[in-house]
Length: 189
Image 1 (cartoon, rainbow, N blue to C red):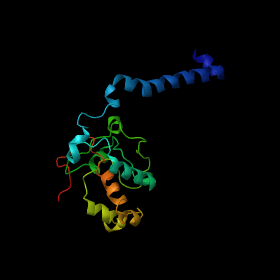
Image 2 (cartoon, helix red, strand yellow; image 1 turned 60 degrees about the horizontal axis):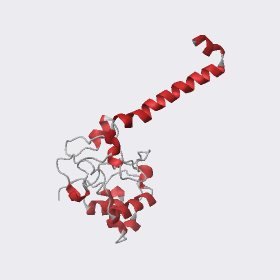
Image 3 (cartoon, helix red, strand yellow; image 1 turned 135 degrees about the horizontal axis):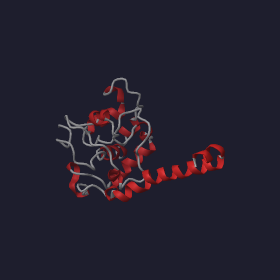
Image 4 (cartoon, rainbow, N blue to C red; image 1 turned 180 degrees about the vertical axis):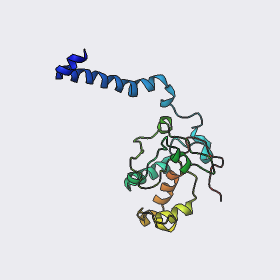
């Protein structure tokens, strides 16, 4: 059988395609069939819990903020997923608690998903509740005032808009709230 693959290009291509499709089935089709929890939101994802619980379904103000986030291209530089790397879980943790790795069930209500692929800026998957409104105001007005060496552009038109700024901050405060994992859920006032 192996000799046939050595002498026949067609046989080698067919064997390669069969192995490729078996690998594809084992990595994309089988896992969701085995673990049914991926298609369901977390148990603590009751939207009525408010800012201290999970905020999975977005209200109108948060949806408007998400639209601004998309329009301004924030997701070009900021991802919204904690990878399985130890450095990610440490870096985006909160008060000594490692950030949990992102799982598919956190993004059940997101359409389209805002995972992002480029990490020019920090990951925003667990940023909700970490900073207050004044911090966001200063950051969007001039990011270098808070983060030395930042290459993020300023967004003064958003800060000066009485409708857009609260919407964007409301959306930012929802990020990472699908899991109730932090020892203190919000910033210290």
